Length: 271
Ligand SMILES: Cc1cc2nc3c(=O)[nH]c(=O)nc-3n(C[C@H](O)[C@H](O)[C@H](O)COP(=O)(O)OP(=O)(O)OC[C@H]3O[C@@H](n4cnc5c(N)ncnc54)[C@H](O)[C@@H]3O)c2cc1C
Image 1 (cartoon, rainbow, N blue to C red):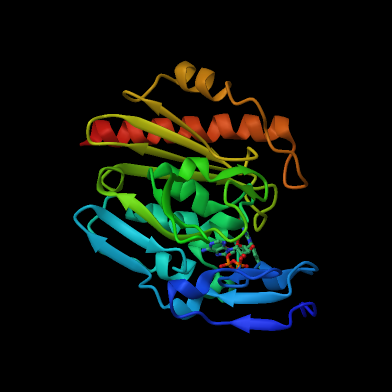
Image 2: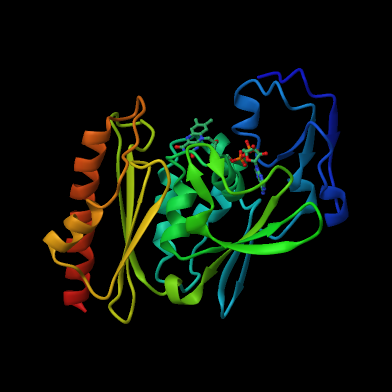
């Protein structure tokens, strides 16, 4: 796609150069930006020039740069974190070719904020906090759950930059499992549900794609099937688009969540 409104392109190498001028927007992998007309965009500011390390590991957990690509995330192996398989499962929920995976970034996926953003499922399920740089040089952190408020809408203002995603050790040591449903075998996620059971028995379930924004529910232990169902039934809105009707999305989400509940309970019993 030629976006023929663009007449400037910057590759900042220092944070001070990240302030957007009128008409400028941040460019990460470009897998969405270059996929459709952008009539309001006259300049691109390429975040990849900052060369942030894709992944940084410490005893506190993992820090993903916003510019970490899906390919880099999916390639993580032997990190020692129990939740590691969820990285690949979440990447696989985005059904792009290797060409898309090689450029699409974790930050771009979160900031684009599609209902079917698999990085939202990953980060909300792992209690991520997001580091956001404001255009005035301020730095703030956000719970990943609070970023996306609706399809294509986040709490970020124009000029806010998502710098990094911090995944805490406690969540990374949890057992995780995920389920995805689509209307077609290679279709976009209509429901993507993640479960996590912590070492202390606490259970978390996160619903994405079936709802306009992510929902996260916590339980002190593995809930019973009726408890889980009753909790999910408090979700007030189910997403409606060509990838699935709200009623079907609700029904399939309840089924997938029940599968996760059973799987994580069985894994607990097997230990
Ligand atoms: C075949 C195909 C399948 C796809 N399937 C899915 C899917 O299932 N689910 C899904 O969610 N998406 C999907 N996409 C859309 C898109 O490719 C992904 O969301 C991708 O992760 C976007 O990342 P990017 O780095 O390419 O973002 P870009 O296209 O570079 O940017 C996306 C938006 O985010 C902003 N942005 C990027 N990084 C930052 C940052 N750090 N701080 C602030 N703003 C930022 C940009 O200004 C832009 O508005 C698909 C695309 C293709 C081509």
